[in-house]
Structures are given as structure tokens and as C-alpha cells.
Image (cartoon, rainbow, N blue to C red; front, side, top):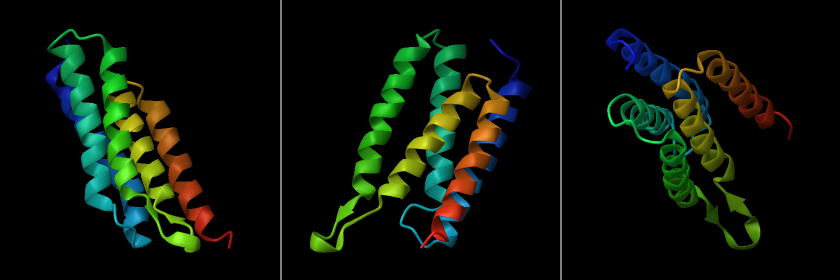
Length: 131
């Protein structure tokens, strides 16, 4: 089991990184914004940390459960509007990726999580200006 200070550090990091992605969604006036992204990232990390440190659970099964659950949340953000197209697909993808960032922090892959978050935020900002 890892020390308590490292677990707490992980929680602060997921709030920060999930918040960066959520802030972009909030600025873009999307339905899932800052709070939702932070909560998804935090929840994914917390489940990962507790399953590994306290329940000695097989981490691959935990990850599979998180990804499946987030799929349902993401599906709820996608709205088909007849011939006008589909809305919410990017928000669903951003929720999915912050869940994975939470998982990666939960297992201790800090640098991978930070670099991935930078890529996600850049992709979201650059994508807005391609039109």
C-alpha cells in the first residue's frame, strides 16, 4: 500500500488535470463542464486507488468497469438532432479520456497523465478554430 501523502497527491492531481479539460468545455458552453470532468476524473482515480491499495483487486477488471460505466455517461451526452447532425460527441470523448487520465494517475503514471492532458486541451482548443 502506498503512503497516504501519495494518495492525497494523486487526488489533487486528478482534480487539477480533470479541471483543465473541464474548463475548456465550460468556456465552450458545453453541457458537461468543469464539475463533471473533475468528478469523472476523481471518481476513476479513487476507484483505481482503493481497489489496488485496499481490496487487492485485479486492476484490469476495475479499469474495464470504469470504461464501461463512462460509456453510458458519454452516451447520454450525445444528442441526435435530425438532419442537423449529432451534438455532444466531443464532450463524450472528453469525459472518456478524463476517466482514463484518472485511472492512469490512480496507478501512478503521472507523466503520462500530464502529457495526455496537455494533448487533450490542445486538441480541444485547436479544434474550435478549424472552422
